[in-house]
Image 1 (spheres, rainbow, N blue to C red):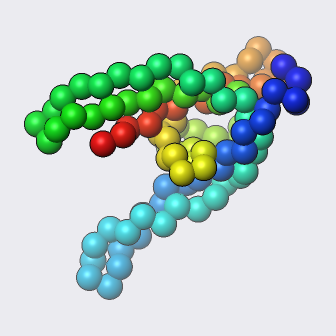
Image 2: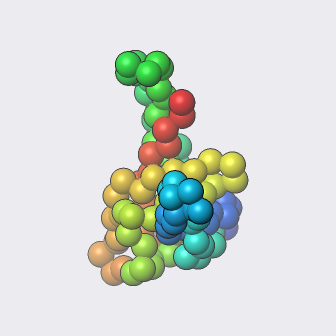
Length: 105
């Protein structure tokens, strides 16, 4: 894959949480890296839960290989925040696919 196909800037974040003065959990993500990626929209599905209808979208990002990215991190793509489901490096560890899921309430 050529660099010209990597047109999407994404931010890989560590979803840290801390406690405020009242003892409530507060999300305070820290940025691990901002990288260029090739975005591939895969699928979407909708289902019903007790709290209502939920939609899920699957997205794959192809990026240059990084050994410091795990499924504990999250991806921020513009206004979208996605959970990392799986990371699949290529055989030579030059590129990797980050498979993500976005929950849309």
